[in-house]
Image 1: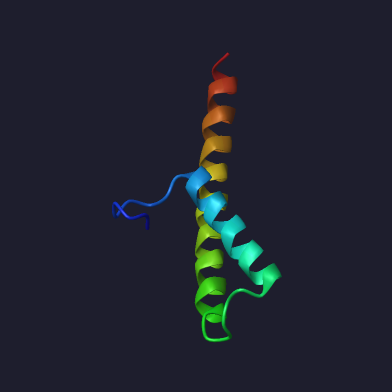
Image 2 (image 1 turned 90 degrees about the vertical axis):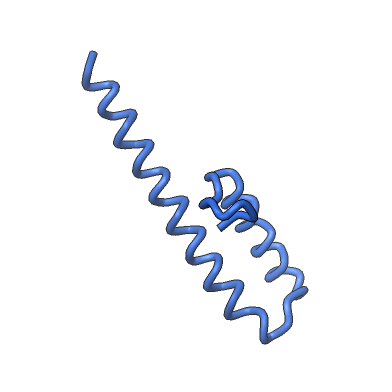
Length: 66
């Protein structure tokens, strides 16, 4: 969830994923932080996939109307 208590937008989720990925690559997380970061990344990936599936469904539906 974002600071406002709402689910992040696709763009916000993607940016957070980039931040987590960069932190993993640079080794900036402690060993104790890594499981939480991986868990959060998994949540964000699922959120992004769901948003993309929803958009795909909506666009397909709009294209079928023509």
